[in-house]
Image 1 (tube, rainbow, N blue to C red):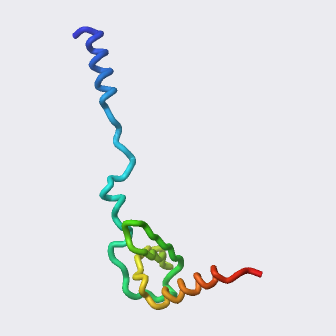
Image 2 (cartoon, rainbow, N blue to C red; image 1 turned 45 degrees about the horizontal axis):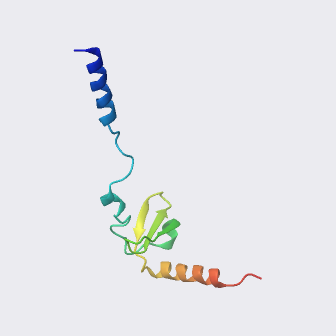
Image 3 (cartoon, one colour; image 1 turned 180 degrees about the vertical axis):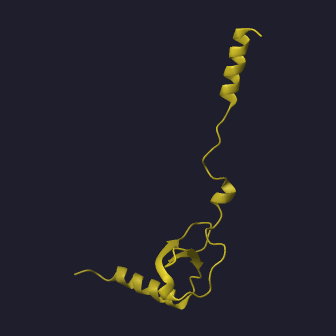
Length: 96
């Protein structure tokens, strides 16, 4: 095989090679983080709360437990509703 032809074929192969993308497929991007939620969870088990609201998903609450496990909570849990209500009231109060 001619050296020039080999160089051209190698160059074309290198130009057509596309490295795999690091972006997530659209089907994964549009999925909600919480697919199922726990219906009840004692407040004492929760170390940290995280709230996610995206256009494609309903309001989601992720609780990090004392065991470092993360679970999705039902936003209708009574103590969580009270917690959110108190947090909103604190934000509304003017600081003196």
